[in-house]
Length: 273
Image (cartoon, rainbow, N blue to C red; front, top):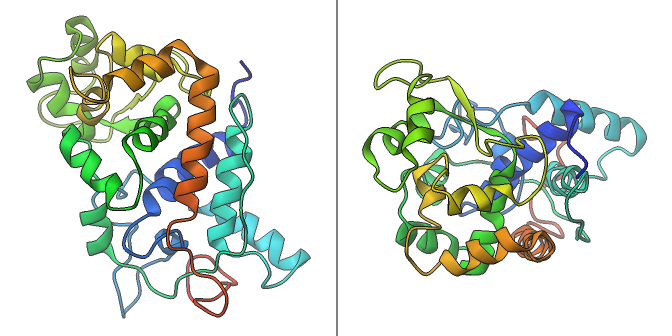
């Protein structure tokens, strides 16, 4: 399995699966998460799910700057995220055809991000409801959760799970408690996939089978409920996971995009033209 050794590629996976996957708020996949706050609105970057978590916006800035030199006002910021998601996952993972032509929003909503993006404390019912509201099925949700095979999470995101939950391997919990105390060290990071955090593979699901999901919401996918069979399926077959992940990304990428004359193609992804 080819690992994502390149920093830019690893960033693209993380920002795509944190910004692109979770940019499906009420506005859809429109690059709204990239907008900086202004005097007229407070954007999504400081929403609870994104604050101190979604990073690396400077890489998108560089990609956009290069594109503007080569073909001004042709490629939107929303399409950059969609393409980056696919191209980074390709290093060891699946590929899929990305439909292009999205346009960028001219506003953003922290309130919408706070209410539409499920927090790491979510139970399965809340997760299903959040994804269903965007037209995504249980299978889509469990497959897309496999994006947690790469990246990291902050102590504040998994503290409750390692101290309060019973559906976690005790030795795994103790090892995390050494780095993430009950109070303090909120920004200490831990790998979402404990074995291969820079490889796009199916070990995330195998960890869930062993009660070693980092987040409460991760382990909810395998906790004696309706999602269990899908976790077992993806843990048993990386090819099935790759196929369903790709299908989920295609479906998610088509959630309420701005096309035609709607929105704009931003010159700078951080601000409207």
